[in-house]
Length: 199
Image (cartoon, rainbow, N blue to C red; front, side, top):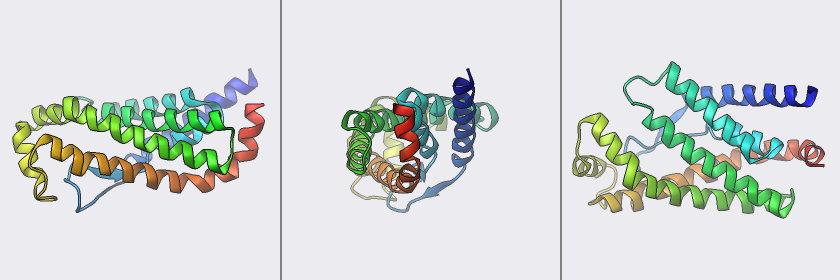
């Protein structure tokens, strides 16, 4: 019982930290303005390395529900759903490969790099079919208008597929790599704890 209570407390704390980190977003001039770099997946990745992939998904869910309730106004939860899918994919794949290879420096980098690539692919498909059209509805813009708007950041963006290829896909690659680099020192400090929990 004590172990379950402690786990719930840690996951609640990580969810709260992830929620607060959602407010740190950095626009990058090489990408359209709606793609802003954030690091709110870090607490979920930490939670998943400690307690398993499902724990990371729970952190992702809780932080996005908090954000949708307390902050999101007219977005209809589209941004939160996008963040949840991206973060959960990154965390689950990363930690699954870490556990598969056993905890080590090599498994961390293989896991997070694989998780980054899978996340970029999943979000490319999800943005093409779901999120960019949904954003268009919310903004009162058509998909071609969003594509034209995105050309101010990259003149090569001439279609929705080009937007995915030149913006969404590399953006998620960059995001995953940066979050993996930031999380690595935390992972190193937690490795003894992770080994204890895994036993």
